[in-house]
Image (cartoon, rainbow, N blue to C red; front, side):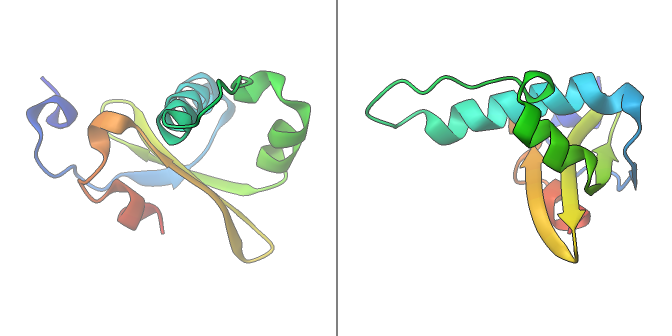
Length: 102
């Protein structure tokens, strides 16, 4: 069982994003967007990160870091000295992942 499943604090493993992380980053992005939009009055289609040309271009021009447990559980993207994105897997929220990525 990973520490993610155990519910305790996660060890800090922040590193640079690499292309092998894209699928997991895409899943974290989609799940977080679903959570964000869950209470909207209308249904909003979430385009997967890998298929959204505008968001993907912004992602690719950013400096991206990931937080890794046994797998990637969060990521942050910076561009021109500003935070552009910060997403954390739902099961890892409240455990310091976002703070570590800042």
